[in-house]
Length: 233
Image 1 (tube, rainbow, N blue to C red):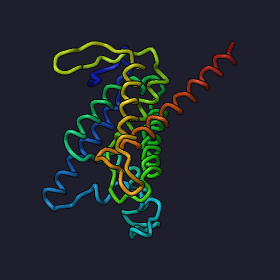
Image 2 (cartoon, rainbow, N blue to C red):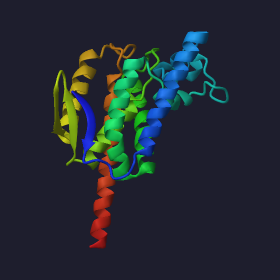
Image 3 (cartoon, rainbow, N blue to C red):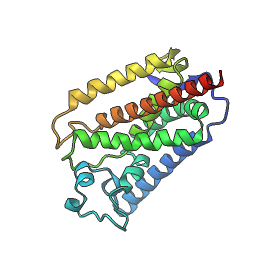
């Protein structure tokens, strides 16, 4: 099932969500040009490699100065993708859920969810695959955080969903997201092999880490808003 849009519609134009989509598309274009023209693979340079993140010196990464600072891949990797299909699926989910969340919690908090969730997703991947040398890229972890926050912040929303080959109808957002998260859990533990390898081309643990981080942040926001309402009363 594929999300097309959330209901009700956002009251404000989701400029930040659209800007993030644009950045990811442009970054993919740069990836493609550098690879085809010069044979430079940005995924190998800026992908998050668990072993290198835990032991930077073991991978020849400088802790000060240079383009390969140990922290840089945690941010740059969020805008890189492994292929056109990878990019398309991620942008579909970001476009569907990002606007509603951005409208609900505000642009600054939306950025905190996106980048904080993306970093948490990488941390979860490193935790379960600490010795892996495979670079991990993609906005999936950050987008999973958006989904987690959306579940908590907008529990009464609906998702206009496409069920191949021809069915379109709205699904309650909590049901859609719980089905999505159940699929991630099944895939994560079904494909987990060892600390040295993730057993799949998809970093399932990163998705779960991002989703959990986003849901936690959404829960904190709801708690604060309830406290403010109680104080006003």
